[in-house]
Image 1 (cartoon, helix red, strand yellow):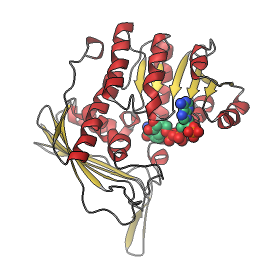
Image 2 (image 1 turned 90 degrees about the vertical axis):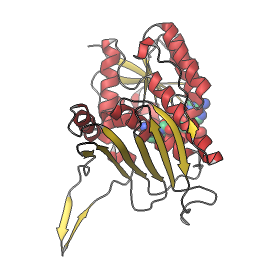
Image 3 (image 1 turned 60 degrees about the horizontal axis):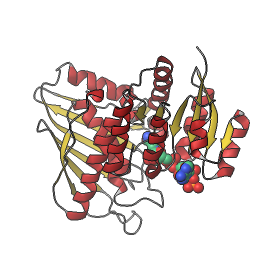
Image 4 (image 1 turned 180 degrees about the vertical axis):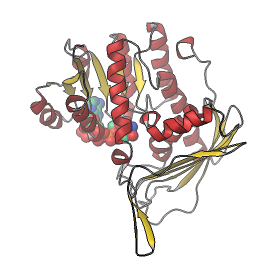
Length: 335
Ligand code: NAP
């Protein structure tokens, strides 16, 4: 198997995380080139790897040493980079979101459909988490009967300075939105957002926590508590309630300490710790699928549907009203 040359656009938080894994821990891949508007950061990361540094993103995508691209720049840049990769026939793993507007997401869908085969995978890594996969298999086996409700929790210890009230949907709940669509195999049709009393520990002006309520095509109701200044750790929970039983994410692979009349279990500190295995499986499978020439994993359609739902949730946050999600017909490429 030849070694896949990967170009990475964006060398910040998750970009550097993916670069390290791609170059050192994934068989059959190396980081061939990087680009970042923060040139010094790109140079510092590329130097030890012997990777090229491009000062223009399109030059990276055009580089003959780059067989496939990972996009880890800010969300508003993603759609343009996905479109450039599709135009050149290069596979792309785009971090979420695929696009920050529904119109941009549709442009990516249309370009990929016109190209005629899938090139885009979106970084919804929870689909690669073993506990989420077991939940999905349990639901598909019929063990809990007909799914009726989903209860989700997404808590972070503290939000970064740039976090806005809208980002509780677009950056945080987007993971539960994709996971729910994938677990249930249904689309989301409406969103309502409730805003409980604000935590006094949230930065000034941030509407935190929020309760996002979703409805699906089959009438399942999903509640997502998003609380990004929960202080104590990174805590992700999910339970699907069915007509015959329930299935829930179990405790993560931490140890528990029983001592002095109490049991203590560690809570992950952040998403990197909680989903490290999922990120590894995601990237390994993406590299394998590029070698095999068949894109797998979350598609541009999944990215489009997630953006349509987060757009509705942001609208619901602003208006206080239930907002419907009107999806286009699913193109055959994604059926
Ligand atoms: P980050 O730390 O700010 O990194 C982004 C990098 O891209 C920075 O170095 C930034 O430079 C650079 N950049 C800005 N504009 C650019 C452009 N036009 N072209 C190329 N590079 C550009 O952000 P992050 O936390 O890594 O997040 C990046 C993306 O990954 C976001 O879409 C985020 O939602 C996603 N993400 C996903 C997960 C997940 O769980 N799957 C987790 C974290 C992040 P400056 O610093 O100079 O602006």
